[in-house]
Image 1 (spheres, rainbow, N blue to C red):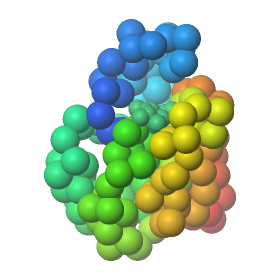
Image 2: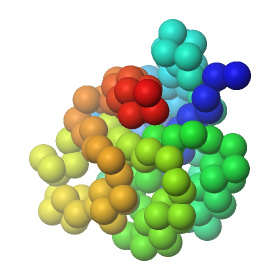
Image 3: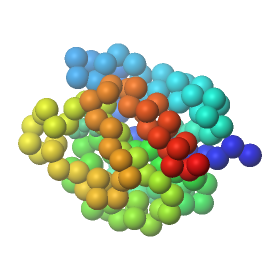
Image 4: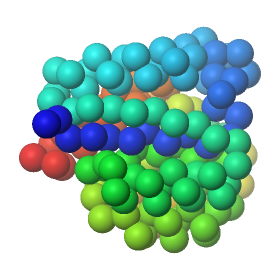
Amino acid sequence: MARMIHILNGPNLNLLGKREPEIYGRDTLEDVAQSCATLGDALGLETALYQSNHEGEIVEMIHRAREAASGIIINPAAYTHTSVAILDALNAFEGPVLEVHISNVHKRESFRHHSYVSLRAEGVIAGFGVQGYELALRRIAVLLG
Ligand code: DQA
């Protein structure tokens, strides 16, 4: 059976494709789910993509991944910069965690330069647009061997 990767997304990413397209592009989260599913097939990985606007729900998604996933790719969106709860949940997950940001957060406001999640993540991809999710999937395939 193919190993399962959960791709978790935080607040406002449900609006991807419509929200600030000059920053985040025109692809939707559904497009991301499809391109990751196709690439996952080629890499021998199954993928499931989830999104929530609620911090506690993202914590519970990470708890569910403990039972159901070999690795996590997470774009915590604004919670990246604020959430100790998401960091603690990821610390309780045993597999590889990769952090993705569609935009180059380091080119933006200084409050986006700090990430709690980076204290846990094996790697961070920022500024590659939605292609970052596919790059993270390729990396997680290597990490899982
Ligand atoms: C983001 C960057 C965050 O600073 C921002 O709050 C987001 C999206 C990104 O993918 O570039 O909502 O995580």
